Image (cartoon, rainbow, N blue to C red):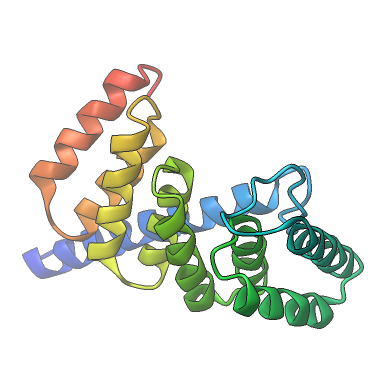
Length: 194
C-alpha cells in the first residue's frame, strides 16, 4: 500500500505543483492585462537625473518605436532598439521597465531578472517590482533571493495579502514551515475571505 517514503514523495509532488501553479498564475495575470502583457510605452515617466530635453525626447521616441514594433510582432527590431537604449541609458527607469517587460515577453527570464534587479537598484521602494522579482527568482530556482524579494514586498506593502501568500509558498518550498505558517496567518488577517 502506502509507505512513509511514497507519502513524502506525494507531498513534495503536490508542493511542486502549488509552486508551478503560482508561477503560471503570475504569467496568466501578466498577459491578461488590458494590453495583453505586451510592453507599452509609459507616458509621463519621470526621467532619470541628468537627462536633458534632447535625451528625454530620444528616449521617448525610441520607446514609442519599440512599442510599435512589438505591437506589430516585429520583436527583433524592438529588441535592438531597447538593447541600444539600455546600453546608453542604464539608469533610466522607463527604459529599464520596457526592456524588462520585453525580456519577460520573450521568456528570457534570466535577462528579465537581471534588468529588474537594475531597476530595483534605482527604485527600491516599488513593492510590485519586488513581488515580480520574487516570482522570477523562484522560477529561476533562486529561492533565497525570492524570499528576500517577497519579504521586501511585504515590508513595503503590508496591506496586500498576495505578498505574504507568495512568501509563504516559497518558505514551504524551503521547508521553513514555521515562518510559512506565520505568513499564512498574516494572509488570513488581511483577507478574511481565504
